[in-house]
Length: 177
Image (cartoon, rainbow, N blue to C red):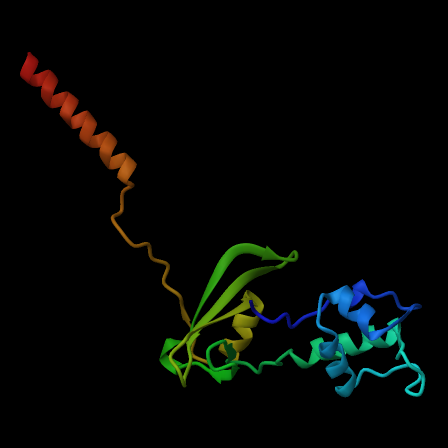
């Protein structure tokens, strides 16, 4: 089972005080995990009193801050490589984009920027917009439109079977005449 790394701050009420055990129950965690949070910056109302109490507003602040640390701001032409777990650039000759017909708001179209990691060779994908593609082109990044291709034959196998059936019927009707 994978470790849960994001916790919904909205499960905690801001005006209420929680013990370590109550926080652990809300997020279905071991109490030692919540104690580790305390070492990482979660502040109790009063450190001298036992059991330790944590104000809901403080818990929410801590969880939002913890979530914010996981965001990686990307510069133009950068991707987050899931294999390397780091920000990487793509091989220059492998950078391409694809603009879909789906709208983003009233004026922009959805786009995907594709590349290959410079270090490990992992395929990279970045969700973007057609406006951002134009900005990347102005910055001098070589972007080529991604080729849309389907594997297999041009016709559907269902169509082929129907055509074969018609040919067989035509041939049998000609032989019967």
